[in-house]
Length: 167
Image 1 (cartoon, rainbow, N blue to C red):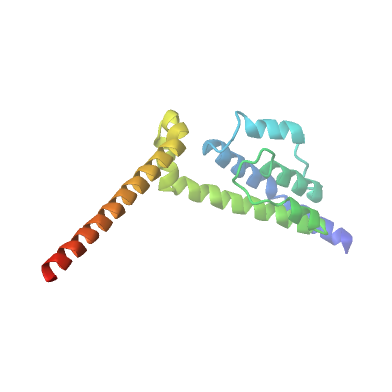
Image 2 (tube, rainbow, N blue to C red; image 1 turned 180 degrees about the horizontal axis):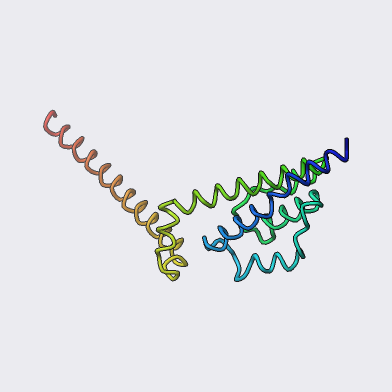
């Protein structure tokens, strides 16, 4: 039975290299690498991808690829799930799930107007954006504070006027 699981896992793992290729292309084409040649560096550190006849090792390699340190931020954290998987087939399922989830995230992000707007902005503005947003919030808060103080004065003046008219 253990041999059947290993054979089934090897068959299931045969589809993983193509998913890895698709995932890597999405990360590279989408500009998701946090460092220059980030994926190349991770692959160099991991060594060659195991073959599908080593399904557990292949699954571990894939999880290490999509959850590198420093993180890319495009894949769910799968290391604990991989460590908890008790069979090669379970490890293959973890790797497959991680790849499919990450690919779906990357494809959805590519359609996002927010991401398109972010990439449209010149890098200099992107670097200054947090400070600009903070300044904008401060300006709005200051205006709101002034507006509220002004309305308190108006209410006070109206109350005084009403008391003079009535009194």
